[in-house]
Length: 316
Length: 253
Image (tube, rainbow over all chains, first blue to last red; front, side, top):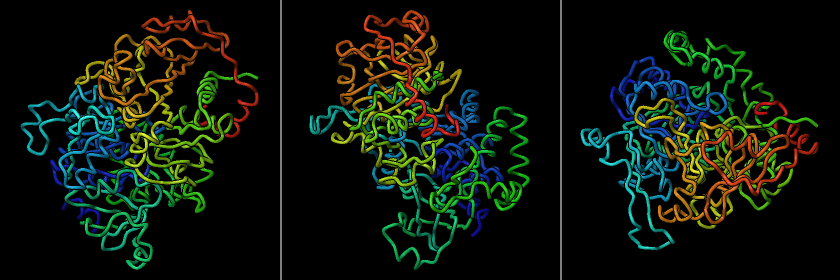
């Protein structure tokens, strides 16, 4: 199955989607661009801090509802620009949680449990203010009736804890992650930080994995302690070198500062941004075409030094 | 030796960090302050990131908390669940000093990094909590970077993203939060602390060339300035290490 087919089969209009990665690292950008090319709309997106991927999906008009902890792309956009604009213009509905809460929500989904507790956000407006109204929640059978619930510790004062916040599980229709190594059956090895990818992958009904390298099954099985996701979760595995570009992929390549700066510039202006979408994404029918359009020289600049996992001398 | 206000801020924050601290940091100047502490006055301090890297070597300045530069030669690379559990854990969380930033702050050190205006129809939308609310909820001390401006030091926040002392001395306990809370606010004119009894912000020090009065002019609320002292300028030694070891490419400074 290629990426076009996987997106066509699993990412539907109105589906509940989550994407892996964090701000400008290991977002599944090839899949994000394919979703934009296929003009899939009305997506309900779950994100913790998946900066660049979220911003491009929002910017292309694919998202109607967003549950998120953080919309930022590091130094390149302290607040993601199209995300900011879409919220200010009320083009998307948004619900705010914290990063830990979103991670726990994916974990709860992966465990098959309805919620998990934390002490985070007590006394804050994350508890008091809801982006999705009660009515909206009640009308939507895919959403819990409440954003979260504060309750007394049912074990009384056990662990010196009086109150806890319960956050509801997330069960995406599909999660898409980009990993360094996978085999054809879908065993995955993530190198460097896993972020919340493992929980996101295991919470979903379907999992699309894109990877830098498809390796032999025996290769992963010879060192199983380093494999985080067993094949049983995967619905599709697709070999996409530079599949996280323009984000970084530890051990393989860095983020592309030139792209991200140009993106931030274009994102600030509607006409420039539409031009960006047309020329960079829609005019290139595959990720390979997109990479050709970016050019080999640029990819050379961000190639990771093997000893470091990033491009040591990259001008940023 | 001349210096910029950004350099003063990074050094002022670094000076607050001790060898036994585990420093949680975000992007930009907070990361630089953590690196400065490690290179200048607290070489034994440990830097860690919400994304799951603990004790990163940081040979090069990261530009995001997901930057591959934080993964290089860390003591352990995990995920978000690991890092927040570390802070929520009653034994390890105690040692954490969180460095945060925000769009607005009030007298009790509560922070807004979500919206200006009405939450459901905001004039300006910011990134949102990320891990900031988690850090502010869990850890024993936070250091907050703020530009000193009236629109940022607010009588009332437009949205309370990250809890400080909430509404006063017993605010955190009433809400059910663990002990802890804001410790310092590092601004471009001076440094604030929080009174042990009232939990209200007070002026602790002002930078060379700045007066207490000028600081008050740039805030919507009044704070006690009676304890304020003039702070030392960064030393040539501090500046050299900051410039040459922490940010030689001038990415933040």
